[in-house]
Image 1 (cartoon, one colour):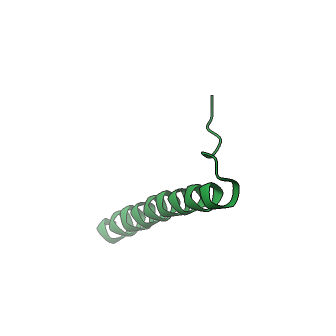
Image 2: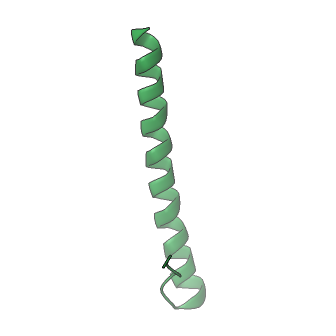
Length: 42
């Protein structure tokens, strides 16, 4: 049971980190490609 909880926590942490890195990279690419700030949710 403990191993399953640890695995789930590790997996969730890595997924969240990857999402943050991907969003940051996409924002940088958008700025370079268009010269504008990326669109934001309203």
